[in-house]
Image (cartoon, rainbow, N blue to C red):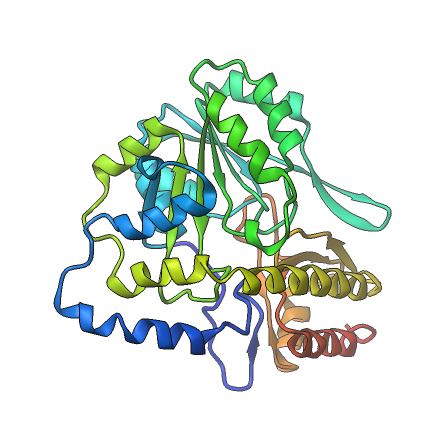
Length: 356
């Protein structure tokens, strides 16, 4: 099992290691799910057809190109054991479960590392598209997996970036796999519309999560859509009853809650920008601009582990990032929460600003 955030439990310690918004609308969800209790004496829909219909109406893809999963991670592992890929390239540093999912399915993995650089005082992980496309060809990879926005670097690959990549890759059967678990934390403009058109011409498989967006990691809700061949292959390997009744009934509820999503996007963008500016002002940090609900930064001190231990003594626990390929013990990721929680984090960071 890979390392993840949320694994250290200590009294008086605030956990900023997990990318879950702090204030879910649980009261409305509780009321909605009370109606599900009477259904527990029956099996849920074996393939979640009603929930797929609700998703189809929102994303504009036919139901036979949608597959439900017990969270995005479940779908990542299902995909890895279903697609029979010769070799998959992963754009790194990124979520560690991608590599593990393919490795346990005996699919060779090739990492293409982004370049860490600094521009105008901000950190950036950059990708040369021509080098990436050449590496796909030379390595013999028939698929590329990216996270968009990327965890933990926070960068967003816009539709033009994807168009240019697909133009450069000459593999006739190339599959682009995109994990969009953090896509809903910003208004992406025309990205979804452009991607929908691209998916008519190219093999693209998208995986999304409702866990992060709606603050319900305990419900485990995810879905995949896009490339028909990939969805068909995954469906054949899909165990029956992947989602329980509570999760299935929650999906239409969440999709109908548009106002909450708009508010979440505005709050996430505002707070991420504000916290990033404050962190950038701290001399011993390099901060990476983020298009998600978390921020990656690098601690430029001789003992980053000691610095984090001191921060935990102040009551703040961050996601250490040494387990991500291409990162080390100097990198940390902080989750963006509500304003009061973010202010608490910044206050504790300022307390260590000059004495560590």
